[in-house]
Length: 348
Image (cartoon, rainbow, N blue to C red; front, side):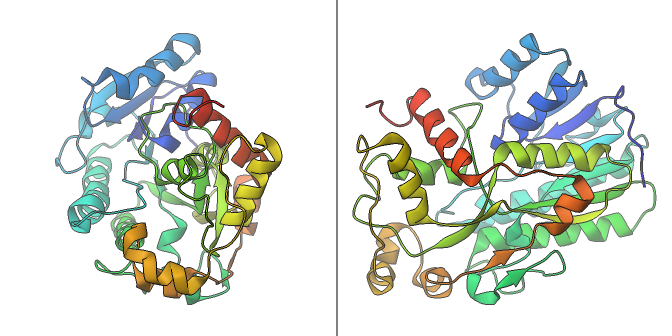
């Protein structure tokens, strides 16, 4: 149990990221001093939204350049901090031809480098790690009810490499945490994160997926794919609750419920009408399987995920972090409206 002093600075890695932006916003609203690390402070388009927040909110923000793969890059920003939130890790739907450099090295080596700095900076009392439900399961075929006691044992560098990277990075974090007794570790394990971004430069996979509902990519139908979903704003709140609730502990699945892709299309059509080519039907699994390489996925993924149903138990997150989840309908509508407002989907 660790009580964190809110008058001390809080460090947020990956500060320009999708989830981190909301964490920074909420901390600044509470008057907290935030030290946010970004890969390059010299790219104004990446940090403009953070600077705007700092100008309008009571807290203070300082940006630091830090690369996940650079040992020792985080110690300067961490000095004097009692709470560290490590959110920096790529979240993309496609890993390209080299998943090791895209996913695995940043997740694993980044975790090691940040926690090495935690071990070196004596003021740190607690680390909140942004993990993922992907560290809990690999494929929907792995089970029908997932809890915090489950671990992903089926992903690999060649099958579901993003999920694999999250699992091995979180396991490494718990291993490093157990090797000492000064700071405690709490992990946040969100299912698929949707909701409005604070910047249109985010590379989040969920933003890329939502754009497909507006640009016609999904107009002929979507796979029978169901997933746990959670609002990015609730994920940010969960990090803050985890950081400042002394008795909080362990892993936390975040999910507001399970939604099918076609259900997202129906929500959007109900709210935005026929202005956009939202999907109206489910594509047959055999067709999705055949076309998988052209759709940017693998046939192994389709075989083990399309057509399956799974439940993600959020009971512990509600109890331990006192979370209240937004309705998924609100999340979907707010997210698509943000894409319109930012020009990422044409206004019609």
